[in-house]
Image 1 (cartoon, rainbow, N blue to C red):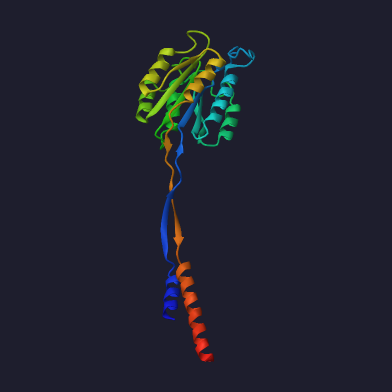
Image 2 (image 1 turned 90 degrees about the vertical axis):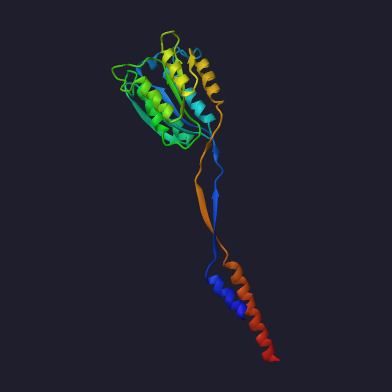
Amino acid sequence: KWLGIVMLILALMSPVKDEPYELAPKKGHEIALILDASQSMSERGFDMNDPSASRFDVVKKIVRDFIKTRKNDNIGLVVFGAYSFIASPLTYDKHILSRIVSQLQVGMAGKYTALYEALAQGVNLLKMSKAKSKVAILLTDGYSTPQVDKIPLDVAIDLAKKEGVKVYPIGIGSGVQDYNRAVLMKIAKETGGVAFGASNAQELQAVYKQINKLEKSEIKNETFTYLKYYYFYPLFIGLISLMLYIYLRNKRGSA
């Protein structure tokens, strides 16, 4: 009898235990894709298999293919011309990101090239990242336009270094003077990245495949806590004890 009463009281107290758990961390990078949408990106002939396609059309297709391969990455998008803007914050939703890329247009940020401002914008996109590996992939086909580029090169590089962002600049174009190789190499060297050049679509595909081999890093996940209740056990024992007590008492009474 008393065992049953004690167990029922214990069950009413609802004993509970905190059980913290953490989801398995995702392996991947946090990546800022920085795309040049200045007027020069409308030039054609970059893809030998489709001469009528503009540079920007080719870039969009290759970038979308690249996005599909980075399943575990948190990717954001910066677009620039005479100014830069964030077209997409960091996201794991590759479908939405791919759709945004497909809707980009040449000249939507002006016809000039604010290259260093765009780099700084990409770094800011990654500023709050908890990933061990933060990467910016900067694609351009031109030189910085001093009249519109509000941020000096050294300031943009220092910002990337401070935030631990490794920059992979990609220069595209068929001519030797199409883009500033020296600047792209400086950006890569000082941030721990690698500078690439591509004179056609096939070479650009190869560049993104090479970048795709980057070492993976962990992105910290939140720890959750759930409450595990133990009231069932004393409740079960208490009910069985009281039922047994009533049964034995009735049995004695009938005897």
